[in-house]
Amino acid sequence: MNAGQEHIARNIFGGVAFAVATAVIGFVLSPFVPESKEAIANIILGNVLGWPLMVLAYHYGSSSGSRAKDATIATAAANDGPLDLTGSEAP
Image 1: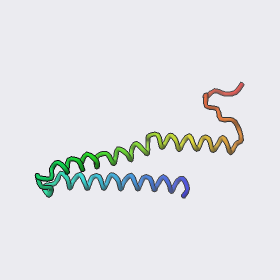
Image 2 (image 1 turned 60 degrees about the vertical axis):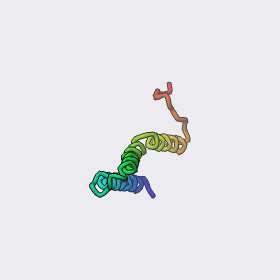
Image 3 (image 1 turned 90 degrees about the vertical axis):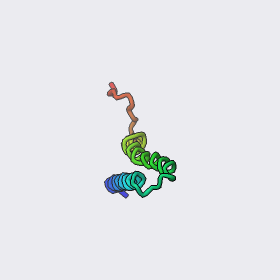
Image 4 (image 1 turned 135 degrees about the vertical axis):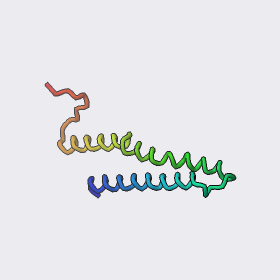
């Protein structure tokens, strides 16, 4: 899978996670859940609300930074040169 396909696959997975979370939230907040099951519905609701946050954290958090770091290291290794992490130019 190339980088473009991987990006599309991650976006599809994220969209599915948001859609499933929306569907579960809609069901839990609907009148179909009896009052006797309200406590378990609140637990489910709390867990489901975390799914989209996990997807966003993966896309924009440390996993994204790790992927960028790996690409930088791979580029430096392919060029067989030292990796400048200071941001300054060599004299």
